[in-house]
Amino acid sequence: MEKKQRRAAALCAALTTVLAVAVAGCDDSTETEDGTSPLTGLKAPAAPVLAVKIDNVGPARPQTGLGAADVVYVERVEAGLSRLMAVYSSHLPPRVGPVRSARETDLELLRQFGEPAFAYSGAQSKLLPLVKDAPVHAVPPDEAPDAYQRGRDRPAPHNLYLRPERALAAAEDAEDAPDIGFRFGAAPAGGRATPSYTVRYPAAAITFTWSGERARYRVAMDGSAVPVADGQGRGPATVVVQGVTIRDSRFHDRAGSATPFTDTTGEGPALVLRDGKAHQAHWERPSATRGTEFTTADGERLDFARGPVWVAYVPRDAVPSGAAGSSR
Image (cartoon, rainbow, N blue to C red; front, side):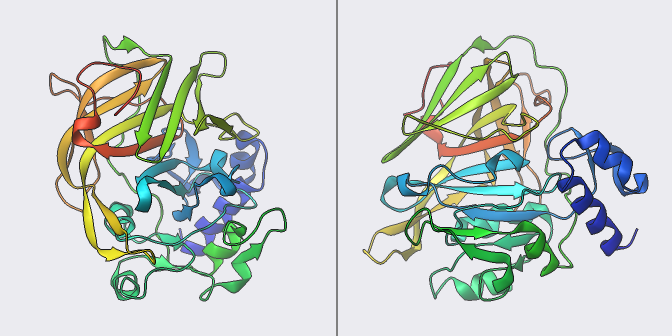
């Protein structure tokens, strides 16, 4: 099917409050081969990928639109803080934000999505040539001004919001969601009961608490609850704490602090949280253009729970060998 027809199907789904109704109202031929999203394992039409860089400091909370994301990546940035990369395909909320600046880490991370649309607000001048050369369809405010608006509820720079439909309209060649290595199905045997787990950065903390009633994880940032469930109760069904190499990059912020670079290729340890249990895992991503495969201790593919996925990148030694209650 032509790109415009697939985009129309995606927008139809995003504007409908009940997914079943949305799919019924769109052309069934827009679905993926088995009718499910490769990012969540849930029923969804094939649709372009939109990645949005989202602020995650106190003045930026609560964020808008996180509940509609298929995948949310948590990255460490300057001063020991964290920032989010939210990836949308199955659903498009009316608004997403606050939108903030891009990092070098984002470019390697997004290679596995083919050629996605990438929304961000600015970047260091030395990084801009790398963004221009990257296989992404960049839609910052200067490229798609109609896709952004300033809110009045908080001060700049924590008040810039994206209109996803308009961003995708400005990135007509953005590719549909590909297979990025995730597999969905029954939980692996074993695991340790872990009702709550906290990922800690030098100046930030994110806690994931299992809700059996909702069959989803609740999220709190620095002790304050963050709305991550939309009207359909989506929220994260699986949380991955992925041990990676985090080193100083060649870039610095205005205060002179080195910008961390998170290497999302290679292999290493991981902890996969699903259904209120923690499972030790191993991850492998051979190259930037490949997805990430997660396996159990015996080498079998580790299936995620069907639903949105959050991936928190931490140093390798911060992944506990047992299912403890927090990373270091």
